Structure formats: structure tokens, C-alpha cells
Image (cartoon, rainbow, N blue to C red; front, side, top):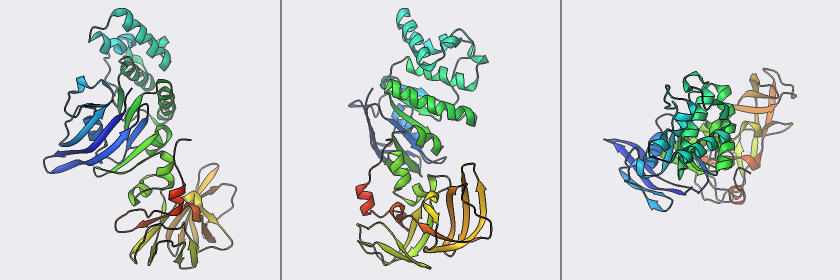
Length: 367
């Protein structure tokens, strides 16, 4: 396998800039997700790495070799698409063997690689079956098998689970991550589904309007979003955002809210008197005897072991995730405490997160 380096990658279609100066590195053996809404540039980025699109500017380095303008066939990269791209008239065995047979690989080697891929994917019993009669999940395994037998430097996956229903997607997420752990394959995976990305990735590049807003481990992106877009896009429900005004000096450890002061992590950056947003995840909003936010419950969404409680407050609508054992009712007056060690502070106009002492100390990773 191989490291992938993307340097100042840009792609323009006429006057439309689809990818805007992206830079990131996928380490050898790492699983990277390109995540974002439709039209954010994630698939275009993947296609440039794979050689299916040529960049307008920038550089792509695969395993130490500059492949920016090499053809896809010269990059030793395997692609897995959303729509499987299988041959319905062929058996599973012949579908998996096709890329090897197409380049004249010796028959004995083809048999060895096909059977090894089938064993890894647990589809040995399907090898003589026609792909036309297989379930969506099994067809996806065959598509993966056809990529695995090539033993490429890297895998590119473009929303490979998008055609499956939610139950199959959950199963295949687990299987893809387990497969990655066995193969230690450098992988770039495109998805718009944050749950897929958070469950599988070592690193996530969150994209918006052609630009990478944050590139980090899943936990870091969830706990310490770098921008307002990331804070709003990641999480279900999204991060609560509470507006307040400065001045907010470097070293600040408290801000004023209508019902009192709210402690915040110590800021390491100087800031002025512009409007700011305080971000807090729903699970870090707690009912309390005393607190800086007061309101009235107007919605309760029961989710089994947890519930999402929506509260109208004098700082806007706030959502809290809490145990279903906590007894609450609509129209109930409540006081809320916001966990200070879990807060993020953003400049409203730029959307940038302000760095804090907590950010400096904390790390992120898959664990």
C-alpha cells in the first residue's frame, strides 16, 4: 500500500470552481473519508486522485510518485462504485477474476487470488453463482472482491453503500472497517452520510463548497469542530449554537448570558467585540437547580434509552439529549447547565472556532 499526498488541488469547470486548493495526506494504511453535502467537491476530489479527472492546479503523490497527470490505468488504484458495475451474465468467480484475466495474469495466480478474496469477504459459497440473483449486500461484496484481487496501492470508494437499504448499510459499514483492518489498505471513501464516516474513518475531510473545512480524526471533529459549518453538519441533532457579543479577550473564562455568567474554556486567542456563537452538543446540556439558561420544554422525542428534549429559551431554541429515565413534560419550566469543558466558541461572521486551552491539551483519534 502507499501514502497519498494531495497538495493545493484545484478543479474548475469553466467559471465554476468545484475544488478549491485542497491539501491533505492519507497515511499508508489509513482509512480516509471525504464527507460533505451534495455538490461539495468530494467526488471530484476522489476522481482526480484516481486519475478519472485531471486537476486544474495542484499535485497528487501516490507512494512517493507524482501521478498528477498520469492515466488512471497507470496509478495502480482500484475503484469501487455505488452501482457495483458488475457483469450480470458472468458468475461471481468470473466477475472477481475479470481484472486479472484482462491483463493476462497466469491462471493459477488468478485462482489463488480469487479464492483468497472470496475467503476474506465470506462469499466462497457464492463463487459459482450468477451475480444477477444476489442480494445487494452480496453484490457489493463481489464488487469489493474484484478490487481486492488486484492488490492495488490504494482503494477509492465512491459512496459504495448508497444503493443499499439502511439495514444493509449498517452491516456493510462494520464489514468494510473489518476488511480494512485485515488488509491495512490505504483507502479514500466518499460519503454524504456522517454516520458512515464516523464509524469507519481514521481521518475525515469535511468539505463544503469545494473547500476542506476540517481534516482530523472523527472524535476531534465531533468534539472540537473547526468551523460553524462542521459544528452544524456533524452530529444528530446538530450542535446547539447560542449567540452572544464581546468583548471577548484572550484569557477569557466566562461570558455573560441573560440569566448569569457561563464558564468557558480559557481562550488563547485575542478577540474583539464582534458577535460570537457558543456551541454545545445536546448531550452536554443538563437540567440543573441553577444555571445561566432558562426556558420551557415544548418538544420531547423518545429514542428508547435516550430522549431529545427541545427547550425554548431566552437565548434561542436548545436541544438536550438525556436518559429516558429523566422525567420531563411539555410546558415544564427548566434551568439548564452547559458543561463548560465541552463548549466551543466561534466568530459568527467568519465561522472560525477560537482556540482554547482545552483545544491545546486535548487530542483526537479512533481510540
